[in-house]
Length: 159
Image (cartoon, rainbow, N blue to C red; front, side, top):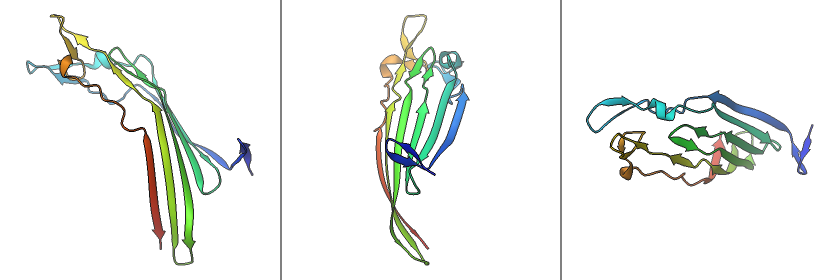
């Protein structure tokens, strides 16, 4: 059986992941310049649950489209924009016999969104600092998202 989607035959749809939670695995404590261990959990308490969902669309036995949606994260000192990741896998059979199977898998993906925005904390002397590790804000560097594109070729030989 086949369901037509944009003129293409969809043979199966599969939900591969679903999670609703509160924890990004962020640290709960940090050591300040005076050597004291201090709680930083209040800065990163989520304002709403995090939601992540993923699934696959199969266009026959050789082609799969993967979709992953991350709803983002919001707290007092860290916001992460929602992210959509789209991937395509296509397997090309090169040769097959009773003794072996040679194939090439082509994979491409892109991730859209996910920008992080940190907000500084301010101490009693009006000095800004990074809440995540209690260091001076001037020393903190916001990391940009790594290359959002990925292309892979995998040659498989099964015997």
